[in-house]
Amino acid sequence: MDLRESAADRAFRDEVRAFIAANLPKDLKDKSEAGLRMHVHDGQRWHKILAAHGWGAPGWPTEIGGCGWEHGRQYIWEEEMAMAGCPPLSPFAVKMVGPVIAQYGTPEQKARFLPPARSGEHLWCQGYSEPNAGSDLATLRTMAVRDGDNYVVNGMKIWNSYGHEADWMFALVRTSTDGKAQEGISVLLIDMKTKGISHRPIITIDGSHILNEIRFDNVVVPVNNRIGEENKGWTYAKFLLGNERALIAQIAQSTKLVKRIKEIGARELSNGAGLIDEADFRSKLAAIEVELEALRVTNQRVLYEAKTGTAGNGGAILKSKGTFISQALSELMLEAVGYYSSPWVMEQLETGWNQPPIGPSYAKNAMPLYARQRANTIEGGTEEIQKNVISKQVLGL
Ligand SMILES: Cc1cc2nc3c(=O)[nH]c(=O)nc-3n(C[C@H](O)[C@H](O)[C@H](O)COP(=O)(O)OP(=O)(O)OC[C@H]3O[C@@H](n4cnc5c(N)ncnc54)[C@H](O)[C@@H]3O)c2cc1C
Image (cartoon, rainbow, N blue to C red; front, side):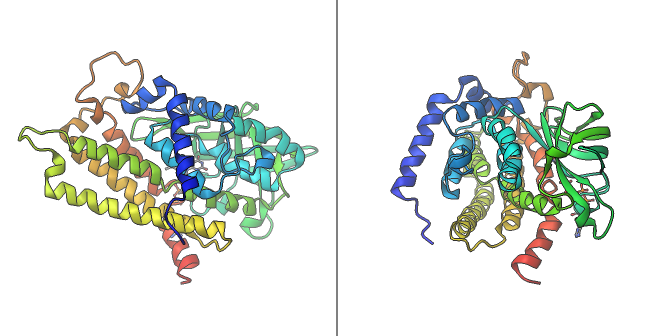
């Protein structure tokens, strides 16, 4: 495995960098640099700009309108976007449900759902977890009962990200209670405007409203919106979860955070030196950077295995290590901004807040970031579950 970037890859990196410099709207760039909160609609706006250039779905094959880039190129693209402070793109449409529809959907479903997912027109959300079905997802109880050409759905989903903003949900529902729990599950694509769907916000410790509890009361969903075969949804769900775990490794975002911490650390303190000049701080940062570099190589190995068809089970390793690093960096960020992280005022993370900021602008996002990153080791499968997967599938225990 050759880890060096080829001349073609370097040229591609330059092309991406130039495109971002010319096309990222100034207000979004300013927002990112000021450490303000990016909303899902900021990401959607940027997605539409990328899509207009033909870059709406980097990983999809060209036959369905994607860029057909192999994983290495996708990684370069993501790294450049993170380093330039582009708003994060919602993963649900392009990275999660899109590949499932492309692989298992009917021709009608592909024609109907893939173009607006690629263009950023449709926002999607994921309806998997339930109050008593998280790690043990197969015990989910939201029922879909067949009624002619429709299903009637009743039940509840929880920890649903962006359900209050989304146009569509891909949901796991129970269509049979016979046999093993995994055998009675189906995947439905549900229009979030359908009568009988309601949501209750869950405000997280960082003050955000991203999560929701979603209720279904006699929600009618056409059978045509089912992906693949009835009761075979567990296969499609697992296909999707593998993609989700690799996403949470956040290598590009962590690289950006290291750069930011170094910039903050380089600022002069009252003693005339920067925090970065202190041996203790420097050694903590170096230790995390070493871990990040190792993760980058592991990521390349996983991508190489995918390219050569020798795919292992790298998703769980990437997720476990990647979340450890992003949490450690968010802790170091708190250390770097010191007491300026304490007077955290939610409103100053919003555009248009017209009071003078409390503390320097670079400190604004440190505390919410720290709080937000706690969830990294829970979402997309908890740390304990990743360790179970690694011990079984990678170590063969
Ligand atoms: C920020 C955030 C966003 C999310 N977004 C979504 C979303 O959009 N859509 C969605 O469907 N879900 C979403 N989730 C839910 C997430 O997938 C679940 O929280 C996660 O799978 C864990 O399930 P749980 O919360 O029910 O915890 P539980 O499964 O009840 O686990 C509780 C504790 O027990 C441990 N545990 C459980 N089983 C085992 C085991 N076999 N071995 C060892 N330890 C075990 C866990 O590690 C954990 O520490 C989100 C969660 C968060 C935090």
